[in-house]
Every structure is written in C-alpha cells, then in structure tokens.
Image (cartoon, rainbow, N blue to C red):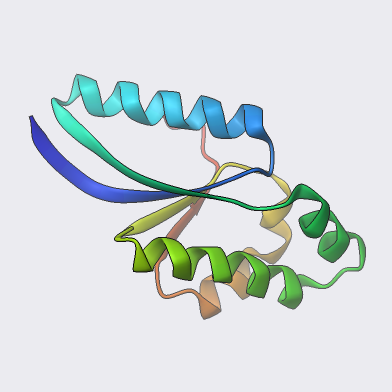
Length: 108
C-alpha cells in the first residue's frame, strides 16, 4: 500500500461525527490502496460553545488554531474539523491557520 498525505483530525466536538469521519477516511483510503496516516487531538465542546455563545469568533479561531498548530507539528498536511459550530469562525480560522483546513463535508 502507498502512503497518503497525513490528515489531522480535531475530535471532541461531536464524538459521533469524529468516529464517523475517521471510519470514512479509513474506508476511502483502503479503497484507494493507501495507508491512512492520521493524527488526532481532542477539543472541548464546552470551550467551543463558550466562544460561540459569546460571539467571540476570533477567540474560537485562536482556540482551534492551537490544535491545528499541534497537528501540523505532528506531521498533518491538512486538518479536518468534523463539526458544525466552527463554521461561525471559518474566515478568521483560515486567516490565521498555516494548514489547509476542511470543516466537515459529506464528500466521504
């Protein structure tokens, strides 16, 4: 099997979504005869809701960017956030993140 790009996954913002996305990534890589290279961190749902509830998009973006930085340091070339709430800060996050970021997609 060939190795694919390293994927970073920010979990914890809906463990069901995290599990679903991980499973779909593994299945897609298997179909393509690629070895899934994955690193994962766990963000706290309560912190995300605090930022979102306060309308603090910049704070939420900084919180999520700290996880993206950790994932990038671990080798991630792109990061997936399988959650809906982070959509409220996607512009702020993409402006400060040095890593390609995808926020949940049905594509898989």
